[in-house]
Amino acid sequence: MSIEVTNQKRIAIVGAGVAGMALAILATKKGYQVSLYERNSGISSLGAGVTLWSNAMFVLQQMGLEKEINRVAGRPHFMRQFNQDGAKLAELDIEDVNRLSGYPSVSILRRDLMRILANSLEHLGVHIQFNASITLQDIDALKQEYELVVGADGRMNSVVREFLYKDKVTPCYQGFINIIGISQLDQSDNAIYDFRGMGERFGIVPIKAGLHYWAAGWQSPLDKDKPLSVCYEEMHTRFQGWPDPVKKVLKSYEENSLNHIFVHDLNPLPHWHQENVLIIGDAAHAPLPTSGQGACQALEDAWHLVQCWDKNNELDKVLVGFYQMRIDKTTAAQRVGRQVAQSIFSTDSMIEPNKGPAGISAQQLSAFWMQALDTK
Ligand SMILES: Cc1cc2nc3c(=O)[nH]c(=O)nc-3n(C[C@H](O)[C@H](O)[C@H](O)COP(=O)(O)OP(=O)(O)OC[C@H]3O[C@@H](n4cnc5c(N)ncnc54)[C@H](O)[C@@H]3O)c2cc1C
Image: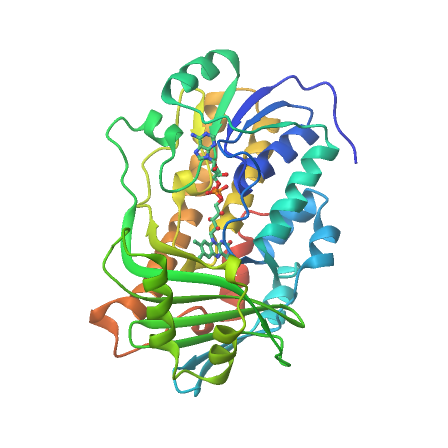
């Protein structure tokens, strides 16, 4: 691992999620001085798993983490879409996407991804400051002390976003709930399964033999007070008659892996910075999980930001250029997430539950994901 030692750029990062840790790694490797603040007492591995498409693997390779990721990740070959009776609707050959883009797509447990990022920081000597819940007043102080303050503090309550937008930006509830978990399931075809019904969806992603993560989703009013036990019961009732893989998953999940999320995203924002304060990742452009791109775009942000700043010392130009370079792609991910969610969960379009990523060609997907990712 080579670290340049001449660069004295100083950067404060709020939030040690995917975006914050990736930025801290890439910036440290360029020789920047990094301070990383996290409100929790440790790294959060909330969430079952993520699929990291070729664009994410490009960035992880740039970070020198590809081997470690491959050691624990799965490599699904197909994405297969079915209706709730198990009839096949569509199929995407993920290996075709990988071939066209030149990078693999992998599935990984979130706890493994977060551990790999945290270990990399430790190797680089970056100490995450835990139990540091940054406030609006803290941002005022950080902005005097550091050349750049970056909010990587997530979609729902980003304090750095609030600093930039005095009229608070409210995340948009998109009308469905997700229950996520990790299960034991033997399945031989190494495919992501995407079962769709009327206003309901059950997705199952293989990691390795016997280990899968999954998400059940259905149309639901926003009800944050609904007890967890009621949500889980409802899931069992809704999906009990679904095809075998769903039944098996529901019989074999790790109890402590379960979580429920009333799913929100953001509308595209007109700017991501003011003076030397910037937001990235979900804080700036959270898409719905139905885009499959939130963590991938967070990784891309980190890589592009360091690339831009490395080539140009004029920070304002860097931040303006960063927004111009990233806004179309992140907006497209937000739009795709909403289109897919609408085709499944909206009452208007329930007649056609078979639209989605599996209906997009491998060429379209690889061209979209690999946009603007090269090392020249
Ligand atoms: C069900 C589900 C499935 C998903 N599946 C995929 C997928 O398959 N592929 C994919 O690419 N993406 C997926 N995503 C999206 C992905 O998880 C997110 O886009 C990604 O985690 C965003 O990373 P982030 O670092 O921007 O934000 P976060 O991961 O939310 O991290 C923000 C961090 O900031 C910290 N923080 C917040 N406020 C403060 C503060 N004031 N001070 C200090 N620290 C603070 C938080 O504690 C947290 O650690 C999925 C999301 C969901 C909900």
